[in-house]
Image 1: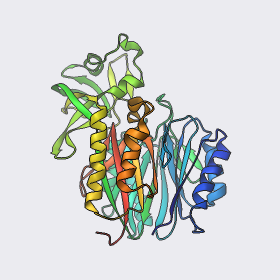
Image 2: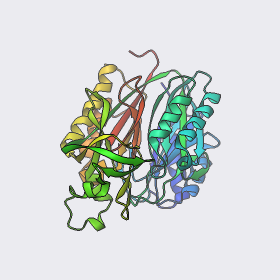
Image 3: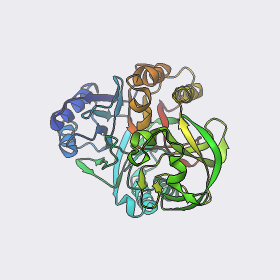
Image 4: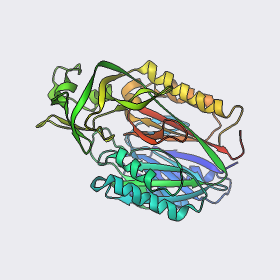
Length: 399
């Protein structure tokens, strides 16, 4: 069995929070040397002091991760302003960490650059590439295209984009003792394991299908010849659309028709707007909706969210009947936690998922500003919004 452990802290002092979460994880490693560290933390912390505290305990083991609006651990979903989760990884797994900066300047180029770094350190051992890009600054679809075109051999790619406290301000990406922005943090896990990935979304398309008539670099300017915002605001159930907030954006999304509908996932992939230019009515979507794309508006559904999440969990278990995973990673949209379930996130979503895999399985994740995963094994890696990615690691040879 792999040496994997998770620790957490709610201490408001960043240095102490990092130490506490790391100490809990390292203490559960039964003396195994820490080969790698994954960290997620809410954005009110002093990010650099947080990493300093973690590395005081974990030493020079490579560290990857990002800031978020909430962490997921065995204790449930924690969206408080000061929360940190630390996962330590030991033998027989291998771990390499990477960082590429300047994501917004050339997302596709940054993806190829990252793939080149991965190739230099892969040595044929890599099995799973975890990506944590800036959730606000870059075109993640182009980033993923660059990564996949630059990899020397196929790898399973999964992860989520970094977030903050739902203010659409600044997010952080972690690499060792560095906390930066407009970057991509990544971790390559290798060794004797296989990964199973499933992705789901919980939105219902509404209204007629329309065509994006002008879009560029993630900005949608016009839909059916009208400003994107004028189309979007028709469906908002608020009196003052000038004061629309992240909460309204989380209820209403755009559903982009997939080139090939997936029988399990559906016909549409969901896109959430993260920026609005009120002067032009243009809206920014990090999923890079292009001119000519067929779209519909979509509303989130609590019932569908839970149904599809548990369906994806069961689909993984069905592929490995009777086997216990070594680790379960969970990357879930920030709009599907407290904004959807209120105070019921744990009982509605987290506990049912953990029950399917087993409560003794190490579990960690975070609330994302976008999710990263293929729809099916061997398919292209896609960027999702308002979705959930489950990634389970199984010992090699399990079938």
